[in-house]
Image 1: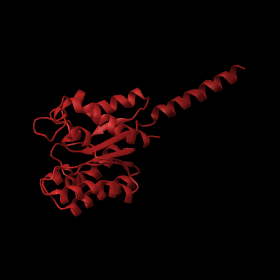
Image 2 (image 1 turned 45 degrees about the vertical axis):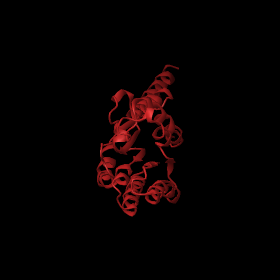
Image 3 (image 1 turned 30 degrees about the vertical axis):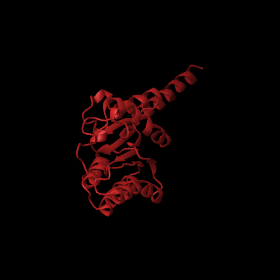
Length: 205
């Protein structure tokens, strides 16, 4: 009986050690100032609120926020391989393209950069969430509409999870935007977290 008990304790110890050795699953966010929390206290930014929601829901995932204010899709595409190798994420959230659109860059260039990030992330074994962006019609409604369609079209083509028109709700309410009219204010951060949460949650296993 004593031998059986000792054996059981040893097996439990081995199982515990194996479980403890499992790396913490990671969620990599590649984005611009919207994800970097420009003009907002870090503790109140939607990415931090998302990390808190994960903990509340019992997920052990760690968010790696690699967002850089002013970043473009080209910069994200150039950084993605290093980020994937360094962090080995299970999930990659791509929140880029807004700065490209505000500068009127060619849509086919934006598309190719996003495709690069999607394909490289998948090749590294990560699932992908694409965050759909929209821009004001500074370059005419035709460009703005084509820009907004770029994200659902890519998501459909690559069977990728999509957060549709991420800023639509807050962008139409001046009270939820900072004085520049581009960046969401502190009051908008919980709304952004709630907008992305159902899509991100569907990709966690």
